[in-house]
Length: 436
Image 1: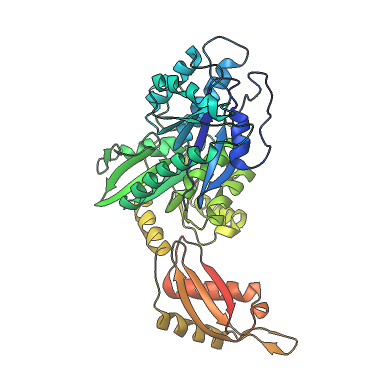
Image 2: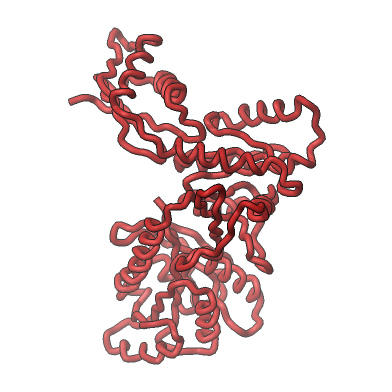
């Protein structure tokens, strides 16, 4: 399930961090009356009305040239780009300032939905002070008090309304959503540009979405795709941190929205620990996965090089033993045509359904070939199995005692299901339940 993101922005010392802490329910951001305390972005999780979402706290944006101001502005701009809904905080005690107008102009250019909160309205009489904030051109201002927690529910209600619009857009979009993840500089954006340069690819902007800055729609051989770029494609002039922390955060957000994840590895540099950590996010999220080795043109090779590299991947990425591997070059565009058939294959596997009768035939055959384990004289009995979900395929097996279902036997059954039904590229979840 995709988790939307709220970015908390505004000029310095309007109470952004206090409201951020209120939203997430803990004291994570540093709260002081000194402007500019929050220099970097802070990420946390929040929930409201059965919606789970991410929250980003940012440093204050202002016109004058203070120390770290350029870095703070950059951090806030990155948060705005990553956000689905923006929560702009102003100070009701000080009224509209030049810095508020400056921030409002930035937000209007972003084309993202904005919820305007006038903070430090600590009592009912002060509510008359909010009307001047209409001049910011961001819609109705909401009075709130970060220090007392007043009015925050109304702000979150409005944010959730925008989440519902996002959900409707997602439901209307039937394209296969594909994200490219990997550590910085493995060639994700180069791959995107190479793919979009293919003659058979029709490229168009996604209209009516708040995420068109990071999504690209294209059609290949009659199939619609949405490419979710985690490397800041088409963000010319924007600087993205090359640190593991932020590359993982961006990868997580892309994975949440994906049907298929392309884990991109630098074939020239080889496999690093960070590659495995980022790939693990896709596996844990239950997404269909393809391992893409890029920069294959730069590798000195003979007739055994590809096989050796593939063996190394299988050894290092044992948790992705179901994922197909392809070797490509964004520079020379070699073997790019291998991507789309694989994407369609693993997407079909990810959403495949198996009839209960056929499933149980395979289970019976599997048990006859390899009897169920025993423990202290008790044997595991599998009475019946049924598929309860897709994306990823999820099966419930009704047994006499769930404690008797050993991990190794569950793994054996998973392999039998893969052999019988070809679940290439997708994880399988097998859940044991005791039959009542």
